[in-house]
Image: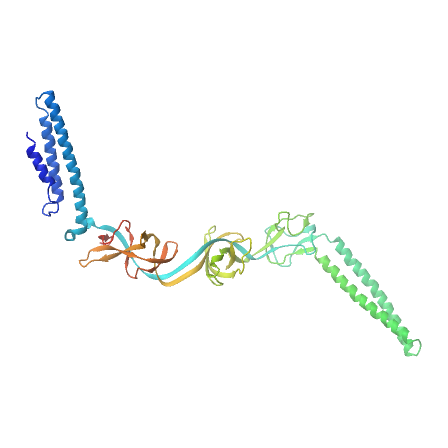
Length: 434
């Protein structure tokens, strides 16, 4: 069968004007496929004739060449078809349909209050934590009246230290006082007798004055001796180690017979009393925030271990930066709670920025190009079709999944929150509500 009519038909198909709207691209593709199929069958039938080997080889080469040309023409047609489909999707609005539109989700742009927080790690501390120490220096423990975990009250006896020498001092002071009292009684008797004789005109004035001076001197000595007794007694009382706060004996690292000095060899308190009725959260803030925070700044404290959150405010703000710290100390008081323990880990969020009536959007809807940051909003044309409109924006502070928009958006606009990837300006879109 001659191939010239077939090739003529293919050439006419290749020169077909694709901009013609009367014949659809789909019908054209079907016709082209049928023509190629017929050609292949004809070539196969022609190869079955009784020809010489030389003629067969020549025929095979011709068929291969023809088939290669047909495949190349088909590839070219496929590329042109794809290009036409893209152009029609953009330009042929009279025949636009939902199959060319992209599905998106939208949310109205709203005005709300926006807060930004500094998120830091800190710990729980107690307002009243007392490391007990001996008043008169290290001494041996003779008796213990406290155990770890015991509740104690302010002034309660915890330890009894060795007081032998101190008791001897008190005894010596009292004996000295007794001797002075005896001498004073004798001196007063002498003075009274001397005064009686002087009243009767017997004796000299010098004798009377001397007797009176002896009495006054001994009275002064007795007063000093009494004060010495008080000192010795106070020293003796220092052998009684008492609690200076009410709370729980959180640490008791001492035994009878050991030397109590207040601190062990590792620098840890031998006895520590913790009052959990007044707790606080403590953290260290970088010095670049020192002008943004003040006493009363709102704070949100989260205890991840017990899954509890408390609202508080800064109660104390350090005014200096220690040499061994990277910032300044901030404290916030906590209510009494049985689940809170000193040294618990806390997540402390300190509010350093707030804006009322701010436009806030999800941070993941923001994209970037060479001009800066932008988002897409939903717009409607005159015929009711919806399309994507690109908006360049300027942002402020971001916290969590939200960010403040300074310029570029207005309240009430429809922000595209899903399906915004790969959108372009003017692209037709549809929403779930359609």
